[in-house]
Length: 256
Length: 334
Ligand SMILES: Nc1ncnc2c1ncn2[C@@H]1O[C@H](COP(=O)(O)OP(=O)(O)OP(=O)(O)O)[C@@H](O)[C@H]1O
Ligand SMILES: [Mg+2]
Image (cartoon, rainbow over all chains, first blue to last red; front, side, top):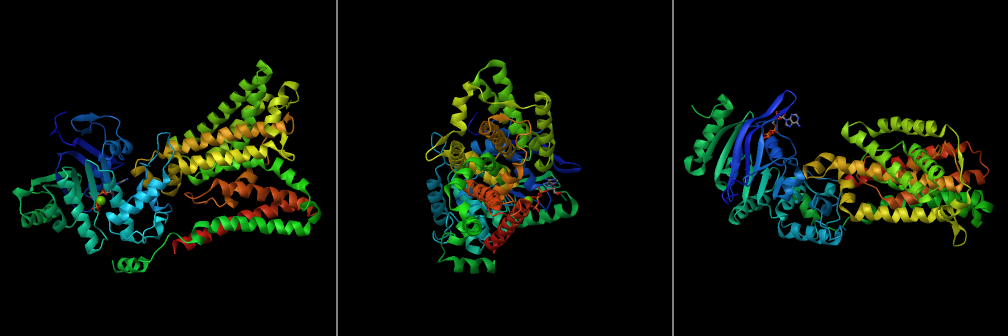
């Protein structure tokens, strides 16, 4: 278990839903302190990849997931989160009838030694996080309010704050800026920078190359479930990247 | 986007959820209860102003309240159990068999609770492993458990009048404080325990999340199948306990035990404000709902209304409480 082993590594991971093959023999690794952009058309398999990394989807026979140099056999979302992987899902994964505090701590509720939930602490933490991190004024976002009653951006704020609360070693952001206002988007991009500064890793999915390119160290292009390209930022300019994205969409190949 | 900035501006002076939003459902339930009570006080004032009828509620209502309370958890997860009357009977049959075989009361008691819990767990396993709607599969297991019990008992009942049984009978269904039946206190204990489980344990939090949005809960690492299996197991445990209570109340184990309690229990849960759509519900609401249902039962008879109208009343109460839920949840969404 050397310290420069990848935080997460996929070996030969495929995912088939009935007839649809969403991922096809994907190999990738994310190193500590690295921010990786994941690019690809609609339906390329980015979200499927994220959910496979999280243990929500089980990879097809033969695919392997390695965490810090160790092969993981019984992967599950709960285990992934225990080991320090947090995700902002594209669909946000909120339970909208429930109050904010319950959503914030969904699956990782704060409890005392004998297992009694510390509801008071969860409420105060939820208020603090929503106001400190997201800048939602504390009176506006009351922890007892059902998520249902919040605006789209505020809901997303809950999902984003939740992923950042647990100091994860690897944070996965699946299109976190969609529908956010300009200032909210900037905050989200700042979060990604903070992840990097604190030496942790991230996978950042966004259709906006102007968000991705400045934020990341490396970019992986997915096309129809396959890894079609893998670039260090030093290897490619933004214009070249945009050009190759169009080419992939047109021809399915990254090279001319 | 513009909608968002707008609503933010509006929200700047914002506040916790409104009183109505938080407690509307609870007030609705209490309102229905008090209104019904007033109707009965007027139409059957003699019966409803004497304490006897309240003592009668305290002994008869817990027989289904003890199952309505755990059923609340199942309904919050978005499932339903229709087999618990049969679980009552199967578990009590276990008690009768173990007791008559070994003479050991507590072994019989324990056996009944274990069989009830396992039967409930079996329901939960079928529902989650095969992804079968609980509404359908628990009709099947209801017949199965009842059939096993009837075959085992050969269709005959057992008297529970042995002197040795008087201790346990007293504990379960004796009378204390002003003649209030002990099963009333058991229903209170069940409410307190399950309130704690639902509101102060991780399992309870997951019950709400499972019923609210199963996929979201799974994406965040909630094991929704395990949560459901456990709610069914809890249901089985309480059904077994209720079976013993109901049998000791009449000092006889009828092989048909449980028949007639299904609708009362389900009506109590919905009247108590637990959402038919899942994700929302309280055990205290169910507790109050049970007593409203109990009062309807007794009140109709005491008012001199033809008992056939009980069903009409029940039907109306269930329909109205479910409509009320739909209206309130619309209001919340707006
Ligand atoms: N649960 C599922 N069952 C069946 N097919 C699925 C499922 N999830 C995803 N797919 C299919 O897998 C493919 C990839 O979907 P995915 O959501 O991973 O794409 P994406 O790259 O995230 O796209 P987008 O940019 O639009 O978010 C799609 O064709 C989709 O229909
Ligand atoms: Mg996606």
